[in-house]
Length: 248
Ligand code: NDP
Ligand code: 8X3
Image 1: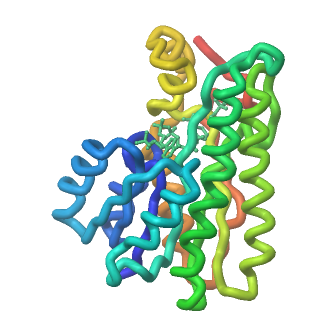
Image 2 (image 1 turned 180 degrees about the horizontal axis):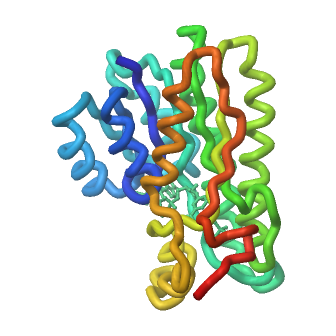
């Protein structure tokens, strides 16, 4: 059975991907909230072998230490899902909190770089593998007040394209998935726990559910070896662009 490492497996898209992929993969599930990691491990261990790793993707040392500490029987990784990430704040660039901007660039962009660099030595020897990077509609379009979140996801888009080129001779496929609005813990994090602002993000239309994105992740990784899905953009039916949403 193949082994998949999923970052951000404690909620939202990453957790839904873990649940979906437990059918066909041994799982390495990563996040910072240990009780959540324990909970999902307990649940999915009935279906497959699961190990958890607790690290902040912004912490280069922790990323490498944790991934290198995997038990020997988990040291061949076939699939990497770079999903961990969040938006922090929604404000004009000139007013945005610098620490929020750092959290997005270091988490959403450097996190993908650190985790991928740590995983590749465990993937390359097999002569094949698959990396799925979770970007966003914010990686395709820049919208007001989202400048640095968008920059962090534009970088993910470039990383996906560049990795696809550089990893080609190594037999490693790269899929970029760019969701529109998905109702997860994302807006609670973006608005720092302000439930009203978070709820308002999703009122008046049907947003995507985390499991909708998990279906596409699973579809991408279950393709025949010869097939490389390069880029998938997934929007709610009511969303036409990053900022165009048809609300009732
Ligand atoms: P959630 O807030 O529900 O989940 C985010 C996940 O990322 C959590 O498991 C969290 O785990 C983990 N995470 C966040 N920051 C870090 C960090 N610094 N180190 C380690 N883990 C981290 O949001 P989503 O499921 O919606 O987001 C998943 C991905 O999808 C993100 O990359 C996001 O940008 C992207 N996305 C989301 C969209 C949406 O509308 N929801 C749309 C497009 C893309 P923990 O807190 O335990 O560390
Ligand atoms: C999350 C979707 O539109 O809030 O990446 O940026 S959006």
